[in-house]
Image 1 (cartoon, rainbow, N blue to C red):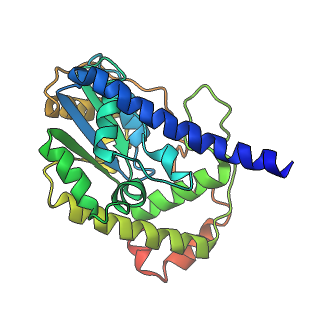
Image 2 (image 1 turned 60 degrees about the vertical axis):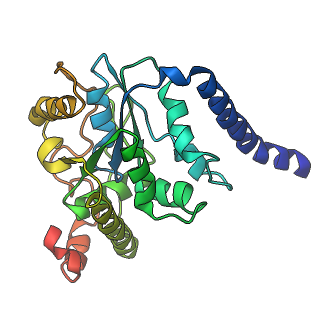
Image 3 (image 1 turned 45 degrees about the vertical axis):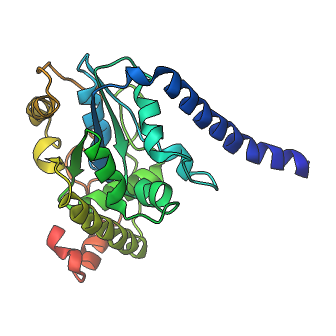
Length: 269
């Protein structure tokens, strides 16, 4: 039984590596099909990247991929063999004029950078100089970002597409867990901002551009123009998880508020 467990445990990494190598092979067979117009959606978690992806994919000439590096982060080796070639290999999978993918900071540092001992901005800069455009999606209220993230983790459900069985169950927020998460995401935001100072990009702010549905079409139009495309009408099946306030489904809301008031993060309350 022990040997069976070991085989099962290594089956997924082996299949994933084989799939990656196959993607490279297909790329060399079809490299002429690489879209000339490509972009990276650089964002933290809980900033509306899935919503924005859904909106942009309404355009017939666009395909926005998901987090193409996320499958590697869950495995022991966590590394992509050829990180620059890999994104090209993904861009030819769908026959669209414009290709984009979702990239998170921890994927940039844990998968793409450590192997080569580069700075985080090196990967994005190289892609930028190879005609990849950068869309930076940012959420100004760090506290709301972290509360939203913790609630999603506890519920084990990140999005509500309107046709699933999502239930806004109340959650308990541990204050020590909260402060650790705030420190972690604040550090990432500082790094993100420093990187973006060095790379031309289009900045989309969650609170201004995505929080309210009335802004969705205008936001999409801004991005379509940035990508050199004509505007089309956009819609989404996604629904807001917290309909009114971030506190609505936090069991110990007052405890959390009192705790945060004593920290540097009180400015977000």
